[in-house]
Length: 391
Image (cartoon, rainbow, N blue to C red; front, side, top):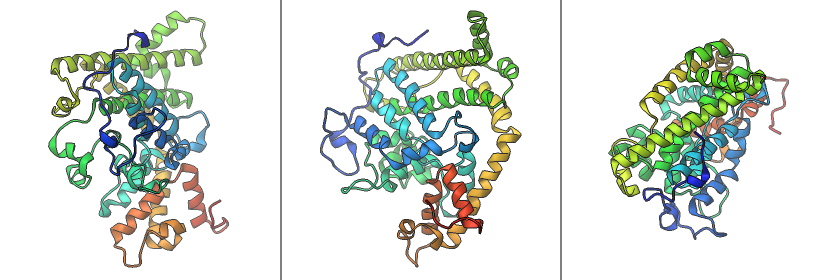
């Protein structure tokens, strides 16, 4: 089954709609040029410094390992594409989905989850570190582009979509976007869809990158996951195709299979719940966006395979351990002597600042680094042969 734009439904009654003045923390005039508030959010994310840095941040493979592997930037674009495809079929706000998708990884550290784990360990005594909360911090505070407010001043619906999960202790400190974690209520369906689009995107591109890198065995992958069933269909249709064509044809069919299952299952769940407005949707205790039980099991098996064969592969693990060590050493050096920080970060500190405040400033700096900048900064700090100033 393929997506047909001509059959897309009209805007659903439960789709998100901008609040007066966009539901922003700081009041603003309405967008100009015929844009909606969610289009404005998307545009602000695209023009942010944090978004540009995603080009050089790891997904699975460290940035310098090859030009063809996914980065946080290409991942975010793929999440946006998958999310918009689903949103169009369900009559949701595509621009909101895209804004959330493009912003959801803005707070990610260099070196992917290895970097996040290392920075969280460094911050254990100072409130911890979690990348989706850091993404919210980026758009609320850290981006500096406007004279009237800090951050990007995004709409409430975009901000709540960025915050995919959160402990109750942290939620209590986050105001409006943290309330649903305390009340057990749900975010917009756009936010729910983007969360699952994230999973669809990374499962598919991690297969592609793992096969390209030679870390995944195609026969094992076909034997253990849904990929195999689709791969055999592609082989039958294109018997003369080379391995590259077979891989890509299978990948795009796999994405479509995930998307259509998500669309069909979510549509049924919405109808069964009988929701007519976003307020009714938010009041539910469980999300409506979901895969079917059979697809959920297929995804579980696929993720288990990738965990064993790719994410824990010795080559990936070695790079992850090196990355963790590098992040820890950067944090420890800057925390022990904040004078090593760039002047604009030093300016955020006072001599009498508490250790938690100093740790957060250091974490902001380290989290904002790209892979290659972190490697270069580490050399500037620890290798006497290197220059001391960033280019």
